[in-house]
Length: 78
Image (cartoon, rainbow, N blue to C red):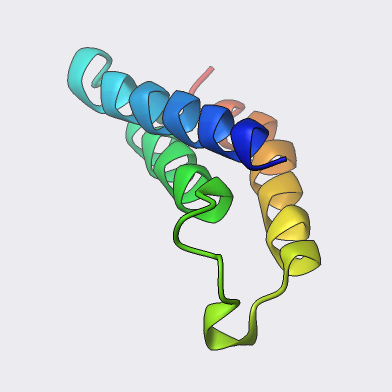
């Protein structure tokens, strides 16, 4: 499970950084912030000892909210 977290974390981080650098159009800055936030939520090293009382279930729900909010962010830019 940690391997999936690392893969998702790096993919979201690199995607967010690429959006921030290469596509300064529309809502890409908001989407890049969303991806960088998702990479922080999915990084296993940051969440080993349950800091601030945030459990794994709460992080999964927050990640799903971020993923489901993506189409809402892209609609005004279209």
